[in-house]
Length: 227
Image 1 (cartoon, rainbow, N blue to C red):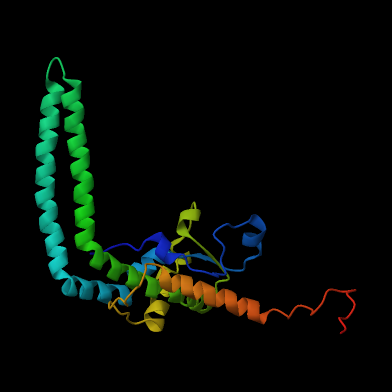
Image 2 (image 1 turned 45 degrees about the vertical axis):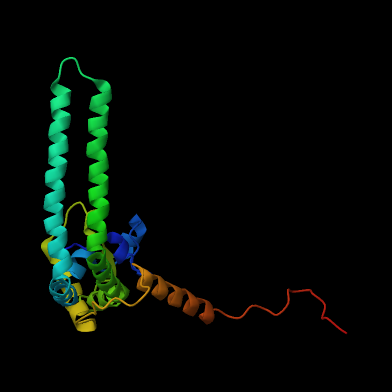
């Protein structure tokens, strides 16, 4: 159940650190650091506790998915064995061989669909946990940057070489633990993965629009309307 958060669930909006860094931006930075945001989220107290709660709450679905998965894999293995038998025959019957290959493919697709249906409640609960963490990640990152006196933060994947002391992932985790000590695994009715992040993004955009000066009532040079 130690699921690493999906990148889409951590598409944190309005982060002051751009993932695409120009040389001038790096040169102007007084203090540069790196942080693995996905790892920070996965190692946070909120995610750790929620994962344990999900394992308990959805134990029946998790066990059913695992048991059914083993059964389906055994059935797929039988079909694979039949395909291998056909492929070794000389001469090969292409019609029979293609039918055997299709049987394997169809069984795999059906198995994935069935296991997906069984595990859907679990996946939705995990997505809801990730979403709650994602909407607070910017706040944790900014707090960690302030605490460490960092003004430019880079994704570790964009770095070729670095010293260990420039990694502030642990600081991000510490701030996240303070800001968001726990999250709920009770998925609201109608919830869709990523919904909280989308709502937060919309709120930020609405706030940005509201802070802009009001446009002039009429374009310059337009005569007043009279009745």
